[in-house]
Amino acid sequence: TKSLWQLLFVKPLAYIILKLGASLKHLGMTKAYLGVSLMIIGLLIRLIILPFNIKTQKQSQMMQKLQPEMMRIEKKYAGRNDQESMMMKSQETMALYQKYKINPLSSCLIALIQLPIFFAFLQAIYKIPTIYEGEIFGWNLGTTPSVGIFTNHQYSFIILLILIILTTFFSFRYTMKNNPTSAAAGDAGNQMNTMLYVMTIFIAFASINLPTAIALYWIVSYAFVIAQTFIMNLIKKRKEDYS
Image (cartoon, rainbow, N blue to C red; front, side, top):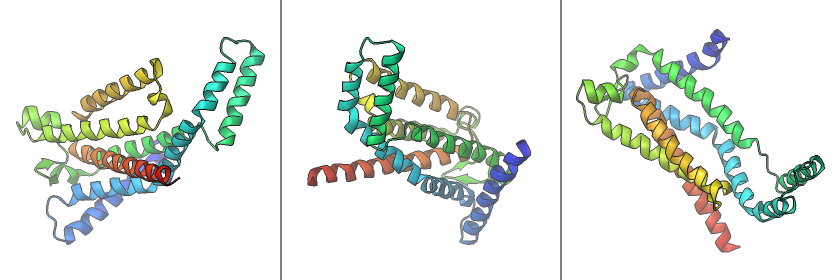
């Protein structure tokens, strides 16, 4: 299984990183060619999964429209925990999803697509020795922020960490803002907001020990998510204004 994973995902990705980097080097780039290659591939991956993301965001917007009907169902079956009532509630909920053409599993699909890509990217970078010779913006691509700051006393790595934190926070925030659960009042909304801060802090601590190459991929990917969400919300607002 491991060899199949390497053959289908890790090795092709490493090959593409090196090939694109070589092309950029021929264009006159020096040490920055691999860093730029990583960022371009990060953007290309986001463009490939863009249709899935757009579909998920549209479904989130539809979820907001069906909230009044969903609340009606919740109120109708409030306090009724018998098997027949639970089955009827489930059937009415599924009928509501079908009415608005919503697939509750679509958000899970995005996660299932993104996670393997991220881990393949991580392994591909560790398999490319020249990554550790490359630099961009004064940061060595193989150096982690912890080594850069505490061992090499290169405090510009703090900027890298700040960029990771900001792109993570705002991408998660915009995504959750389109989720009707996070916009809800009470415990559900508070839990989603708490999760936003917990996830941001977790990513910040995890990124301290990830190489700059991965940090670049992360920043570019989530900056793309922020721009995509902003544009889609803008389009939605204009449609509402004209309707």
